Each structure stands twice: as structure tokens, then as C-alpha cells.
Image 1: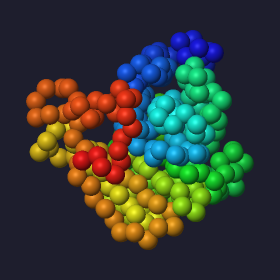
Image 2: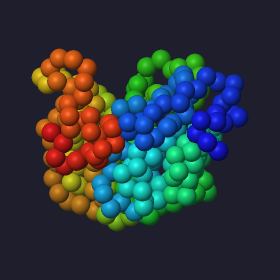
Image 3: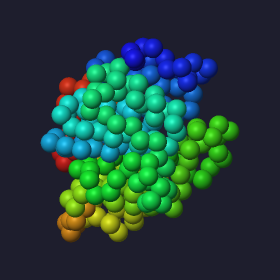
Length: 263
């Protein structure tokens, strides 16, 4: 199915076809609710080269995993998503962008008990890299639509559960990478440092001299290396809306995010 053919299950909804990576990816996603954007691109672009098997937890329409595939077309990607309709949309996006043979979609609650995750096809100890862009609005007022609420709300206990599943899914030396808000950093640090070493935090700021609003955080299973706090990744200059050249190259798909030297 072409990505420009809206799947039947979303024909009753408003959808958009959005270009990512300077038009290298064409993504169909619902007009309302959670919509993939810059966070998903940065997450997918942060997957290290040479990754063989990637798990994208809470994949939504599949953008982060497909961005990773655009940079590493030989990898195998599993897109795990709790909402069956969104998982089907991710499948359509993978097929429409020519990555169908490298992508499997799993309908699974990543916070479910291990037996339930295994029954849904999410195995343990097999992935090289696990990425996630978890819900981020904390304990605020829930959105009236159930799927939208799931995509936008998460507390500290849920973050702990996501990290626990990510770590259990990876092999002995797997890397786990999350993107989230700065306000979630205490929960993320607690969950990451309890289970992994070489924890690395990359703050993301809109402009020089402005506080970071997002963080990329990674950890290495089986490592004992200490915590590293990187200089911030600044997206724009002091004025104007243009991205800085090295950031623009990432968003256009011309280069992956140099995760260890992004400041």
C-alpha cells in the first residue's frame, strides 16, 4: 500500500501526510493526538551506526524507527505500539517508504508483565539498541480521547516500567536511548543508573543561553562507566527560526546525530 493511500481504519479521522528528513520519508499520521516531530527525528538519528536489531518502544506512526532505518538500511527494526490502529499505520508507513522487509510491528503494552509482553512477540535479551519517546505530560489532566491520553501522560512509576522493559529487551551490552522533557530527568536518571552504566545525558535547548527543554539520555547494559553530562545541543541561533547548520543536516537526513559529540 502506498503511504499516500490513507489506511481504512483512519479514514474516519483527519490525517496528514508529512515529510521528514527533507522529504526522504513520507509519513501518514493522525491530525489530532500525538504527532511525531523533532523529538522523533532526533531519537531515530541518535541510533549508533552498525546497529543490527533495533526496538522502538511506543513507536506511534513509526517515525523514529524509520529515521534510524534511513541512516542504517541494513538494520532490523521492531516497532512496539500499544494501540493497534497506530501499529497498523506504522506498518503502512514502513511499507510505503520501502522499508517493509526490515520492519516488524508488535501490538504490545511495554509496561505489561513479562509473560504478556512475550506473548505479544516482544522478546528479551535480543536487541542491540532500544529507543523510546515516552509520553511526557506527567500527571496533568488526561486528554478525553483514550489513545491521546496514553500518548501524552506518564508518571515516574511508568517511566521506571518503560526503562525496565527496555533494559530487559536488550542483550548483555545493549544501549538504551530515551528522549524526554527536562522535568522527567530525575526519574530517568534514577531508572537508568539503577540498571545501566555509561549513562550519558544530552540536554537540548532551543537557543544559546536558554534553558534546555528536552534531554536525550542513553545507558549501556552491563557497563560500570560513570555518568556523563554533555554540552547542550542548541537548535537555533540567538535570533531567527533557522536551524543551525549541523542540526539542519540532521533534520534533512544528510547526517545522523553524532550522539557523543553533539554539543
